[in-house]
Amino acid sequence: MNSAEKPPPTHTRAGFVAVLGAPNAGKSTLVNALVGAKVSIVSPRPQTTRTIVRGIAMYDLPDNPESAQVIYIDTPGIHRPRQRFERAMVAAAWQGAADADVTLFVLDAADAVKSVERGGEALDADSAGIIAQARQSNTKPLLVLNKIDLVKTPMLLEITARLNAVAEFGETFMVSAATGDGLEQMKVHLAAAMPEGPWLFPPDDVSDMPTRMLAAEVTREKLFLALRQELPYACAVETESWEEKKDGSVRIGQVVYVTRESHRPIVLGEGGQQIKTIGASSRRELTALLGRTVHLFLHVKVNERWREDRGLYAAWGLDFDA
Image 1 (cartoon, rainbow, N blue to C red):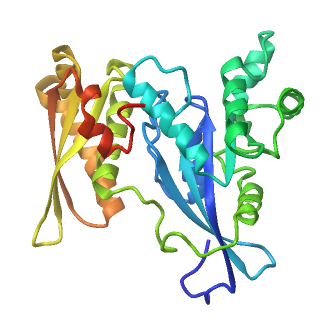
Image 2: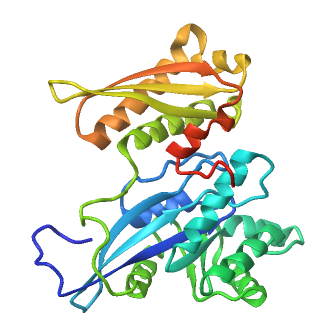
């Protein structure tokens, strides 16, 4: 990462890296690790990422007077969509790939090992389809085997050989987004692969996500982490109001949308305790992220058709008609 005291580089590079893969491959954790800051929310639930998230990283190239700005495009997990909202998420993922200079295909190495041990393939049909489509709009994707800390080396090498035998990849990287293993080598490779040109964002930025959306995403993450399997996937958070206070603090009002009346008490908890806990957790993180006091107020509303609201799609950068 660049230091503020360093003189400007004599040459610069800048470009986009799309991060593709099936749900729960660890894409968001990887992007956060590569950026060095939290730009995308993470939870154990599949399809946590719902829209395009851009994380901005600055890298100095070793033994070279160049500096590279790499914009990582964290995409929704690609799956077979069944509803409008899912179609919009998958379309956003492919749009991210189309706009990229380099595409990473992230695969959960531990899941691949389990599949082989059960007599299956290291690369399932859905993942093979993602790779094939990615090659139509880009050069060969780079294979990123994630979660290598959960796999023994001999099995990891076998999986790597199997994958490269059935699909063509530009390069293969073995990493652990959780521990940081293998990330430095990949950063250097990606920095050097960016096209020459001026930086596309101010060097101190880590994301281009609007602050109101970031605030809503943080609260949604806390919802998923607190309620796990209790809360159906079909919930959303919208930042409804944002009021700057004279003392430098900010008052944020957010709405948590659920699709059924029976879901409201799950989110609220007995005596409203659950929503208070979720709000407190979100408020602490937002205070740290924004660097000032946050007053957060959450309300739970039933909206059976929030997935048909064009305004929400627009706010999230999704195509309603995808």
